[in-house]
Image (cartoon, rainbow, N blue to C red):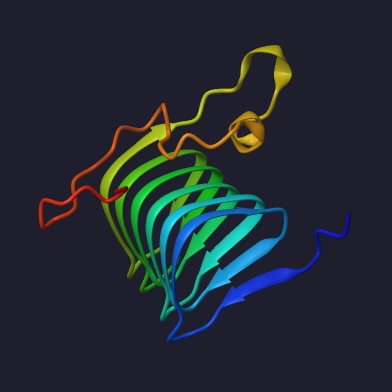
Length: 143
């Protein structure tokens, strides 16, 4: 199967739901829900993702609010992340904002790599390792 494609959520587009992808995802619009990708998720400068992300890598230049479990997370200049991160590699550039909690991702027993098992497991709607966080207005981010 060809995994080289990229799904794009364009500026002005709002989508809600659970997304299971084998390709890259680039968000310039607004996504609410759970996003699972065995590849890269990029949130562009105009993009907003609210919910849960499980991916190989997450790059944020826009806004993310929720929980993310990724091998690598990069918050680039101008990017804003609010919530909880579980990752092996966390990069926070000057000019970006991270407000929340980060925890190191532990290697899985038996040599399995990080999020691979999480990505292959059936979706429960909530990450067992990262409890739900209330948003600044008191509502649950993952409802």
